[in-house]
Each structure stands twice: as C-alpha cells, then as structure tokens.
Image (cartoon, rainbow, N blue to C red; front, side, top):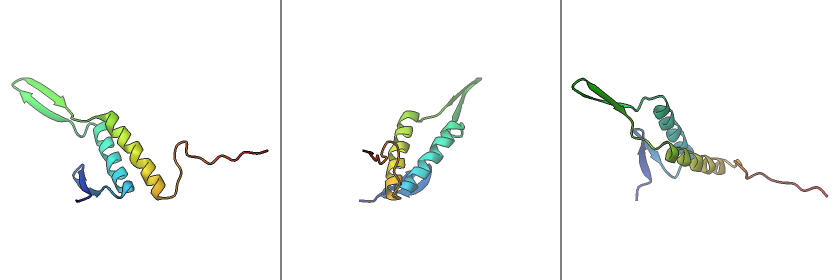
Length: 86
C-alpha cells in the first residue's frame, strides 16, 4: 500500500510527519487568505464558496506537529519533564 497522498497538489509521504505538517500549514494559509475560494455566476448573481473544514484541518496540524516534534526529539505541549525537589 502506498503511503503517498496529495495535499494541495503536492505529493507527500504520510510516514514523514514534518513533510505532511508543512503541506497542511500551507493549505491552512491558502484557506485563510481566501485563495481557495471558488466563484460561480448565475446571470447577475455571484456566489463565492470554499470547501474546507477548518476545525478538522487544525486538528490534523496539531497531530502532525506532535509527530514531527517526536521524530525530531522535541517535546511539545504538556509533555515536559518535571523535576521534584525535596
């Protein structure tokens, strides 16, 4: 089974979380800046829309950020070491 997927027209290996993270962040920027908006015209009426799930995209970015950090030996979020003093 192939581990390659298309994200924003770029082929990415899902086994490389930092590569996936980079493309997901690019997709988020495209959506946020309105670059992914499609326009349809019916006579005098114009409709603009975008097909995106911002919440789901944010969740995927969070997941791949943790995976990328883990792959690079970095701790993220609440995964910090705690040292107790006595």
